[in-house]
Image (cartoon, rainbow over all chains, first blue to last red; front, side, top):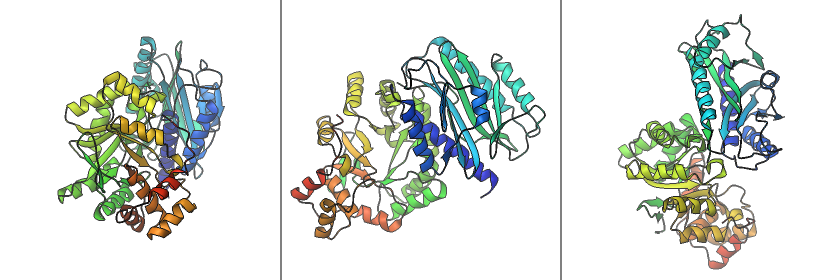
Length: 218
Length: 262
């Protein structure tokens, strides 16, 4: 199996982990149960839960266990509440190569302010995704992101046998896999979007189908 | 109900045995569905989440081009709440179809009934994009919440359902509401070597899997076993020509470890 196929598998399995969170989400679901659901689903899909220190350091999670990072500090102690947001990231490894995914859901009608911030963050992230090119680097993506959303910064990680922050002097080469995300902290809760991209002749091809928008579940 | 099909409230005649496609993908999925259709399956189950709608659609379109009537079920992913019509158009596009036979809400969104999505499902049916609508993995309380919100019950509910998960109250509640039940993972976690199944299999010269699928049929429950093994696909489809006795049905019902979920 080629390196690209391995990493594609890692992105796919990370999406399986995302699905295990989103589809089973209910109020009062314990964080431990969420973690267990992810562990089981990721394992069944041929991956293993792993921690990505670079991602944890970047996000400063309020709760973390294995593959699952939760950001919102407003949730009830150890279980999902119906207020605030559930911003989460999943990190997995498949045959020694890593993948990551992140999303944000709410179990209530979101406030107008939360919806607006999430929408702007998503637009900024999409602008960054549209700017991905061979030979470009973090500076070009940050500039594209800032034109739509100047208040927060992008998450840019190189995915290989580990996740490492992209440095300003790095340039994208065909076949690279990068995780691109955006994170904001609002009065109504945290917002996180995180997706995986393959650098190719078209610029960048997303390797998962995660919605880059606030997910409303009710 | 005939021996081979359930007549749904929508008017659709749903084969009692369908073909489940999770977690098949790509060429493996297309070939498995083509093979299933070639040996007689006429109901194929997929979902947005399975990421195989394109492969399933290719096999189904080829069969329809040959004049074979193949029913397709797909399911809207939970994260599409508020984006139902786009999700439907995405599934239709991936499947390569203009109209969907059966469209289900895959999971109760956020553990809630998802009344806003259900209203969108009703509109899709009114617009002629879908023939039959329903839900998956719903409790009776969640189904009742949809009925309370819209006055319209699902035509079909799909859930994990095996002898171990048998729940007479759930089955009765579906029947009272005119909802057909379709079992996914009908053989998973089933103790096929349990005497209640093994003895019936020996008595009728059938396999334990065929006995379990026949048990579903006699309860009026459709089932979608998944197998990429052609011999097992054929075996799962061949459940006519024998009838479980009342005592055998009761014995298999007795394997249930489920508490009432309704």
